Image 1 (cartoon, rainbow over the protein chains, first blue to last red):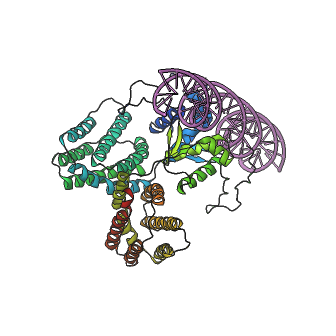
Image 2: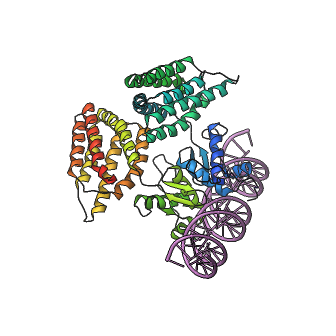
Image 3: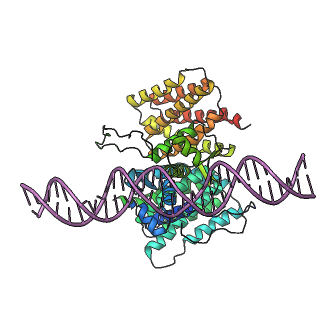
Length: 233
Length: 233
DNA sequence: CGATATAAAATCCTATAGGATATAGTATTG
DNA sequence: CAATACTATATCCTATAGGATTTTATATCG
């Protein structure tokens, strides 16, 4: 490997006191491909050729294949023997419906748990996360929605974190990755409705109102689904 | 590659009429490692060395690294830079609790959906799956429980299939992989209780009784959890 | 001009090699 | 004898190479 990039070694120990390990090439390649998938530079369903990545990233085939294997395990790319890798296809209507059914089973219950576990600090963090979404910066519509979608995901993820079940949080976070790509392709106007729905959630959380939080989350998800459904027509 | 194994090419087209592709080496390596994880030949947390697999499977490093990358993406192995791969650790009490919380959110609702969608053919398939579990063959206690656990998983998976949300089915199936390893390590007597609980489910399904199926599933999961909890003491 | 055949180019897939790092074993010191 | 230093071995990681397969471009035929 002729690449002379500086090592990613930092002297700052992580919280446990250990020295942080340098990143592997395959890890960095994974990050690069992941970012390209998230930004639609690699479009859903499109071919991902190893040799192109060799040229583009200036590393050998080996870490690339390893990173693609990992992305395959995560469902973000698809591999066909002798043909190669391609980005996972865009989610179809059926998967969209299934996703919202899953979310409607998991997120209202988690919102109720979050409300029950709420304290001042957590509430402040949620309010900050929600407040950031109201800011409209930049003129590029798509970029603004992209930012909005990312912040929306962070807001929801924070709720899941407060609810306290890491497995559910990870499950939804993983699904969010796929969903994010979908949203980017079919961006729509940032709407005041979502923000209002988030406010209703925050109100329930502030009151420690578990049933209210559950109801508000359910309504939010149902409306979010209905806002996005036109993408399939 | 000096391996002269015959190609896994079959002339029988799949249902769609396409000719089936030969398996890749990396795919076969994936299957082999997966099987070793599932059978505890590779114990949770233990090292997985590429060079050992090279010798054991008689293939080069490349497909092995690719397969391990995929297993990493699925969470079944863990990679540490410069140290290598190891099997994912055994699930801890906390993850166990989280898993049952997830199951209790998803499976009763799915049982109700399955009951609503029930017909004679599906019911017969479920009865077959449940009936197989009552058979006790062999003298090796651990193997018998292993078989029981696998059949139990198939029974639950069938219910999820009938319920009709493939995303939920996949999510639970993926969690089942981790759970299976746990169960194998902490096997307990096959108990009549689980079978009785399955019977209660079948009764509700036969009656197309969605609320009853939901209740029966909830009770079954709670008792299953309580049967397994001693493993953490 | 469309269909078919052939050739060329691109890509896939795997093996091999070698330097870097971690681990295990052995020797030395106090 | 425990701690430290040194050496040897094993393993990790990545680059490179080459054969096999697929895709693309070109030529030929009817």
